[in-house]
Image 1: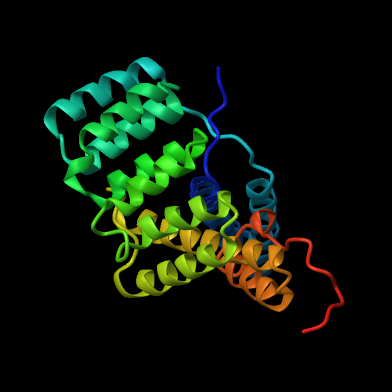
Image 2: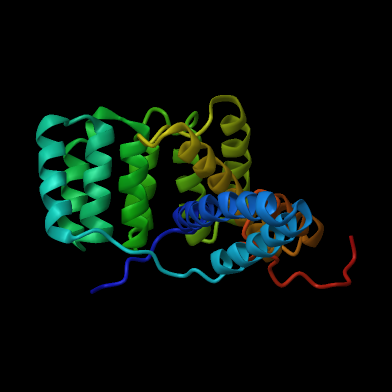
Amino acid sequence: MRQIQYDLEIIYVYKLYYFFSLLIFICPTSLILGWRFGQMLGLLIFILSFLLAYFLMMHKKSFPTPDKKITARKMAKEITQDSTPLAISHFSSQLYFYFNEKRQAIALLEKYQNTHDPLLCATLADILLREGRPRHALRIVHDNPHHTSDPLLLCVLGHILRQMNEWQAAIRIYELSLALSKKSGFPCNGANRFTQFLLTLSYTATIHHSLGDCYLILKNYSQAKKHYLLGNIRIFDVSLWRTGKVPTTHTA
């Protein structure tokens, strides 16, 4: 079966839920052992189990995917009952990433592009960028009336400009995306509040890491280190931390 290449933002959320699932087993076990054999033993078991769960989370690389036939039936049912831009974005993402139906995904998103929904247009632009069509993706973003006010669209625009080696322009866009996300947040993708909170953390971390990459290219090492750090402190899993190849000694 083809391995799905998840974005780091999605991998981070999967990893955290995997860690939480281990904690669900660890906490009751530690309480029972502490009640039965003493608090110190229970605390020791909890600490060791917590560290083991963290180690397993760090080294978790792949996640199971649902059966394709079941997923296809569920997708067909959902899209017939709900044709909102959010549903279209989900449907197209599954077509592209899970079923590898690239043309169908792009065609469907382009069909509903005139809704000017930020999430839908961001999804389309992101897919086009992955397909090596940055100028087409750039036009999609610029044609959207929300492209100067939506944090997610600006994030995708920053990625496009980076791929086009427009480092200074990418920095300005990423900074604007961060500023707007603090006010309005990233658009909801239909997930529950806790998952949305985790996605906000991971998207914010990604933008900071992207800023670090831009500043590193421009040899502004102090700013690069600053943004790598700001990204890392938002990520619980140290295996996803970024440092870049910032020289240990440099002039300010």
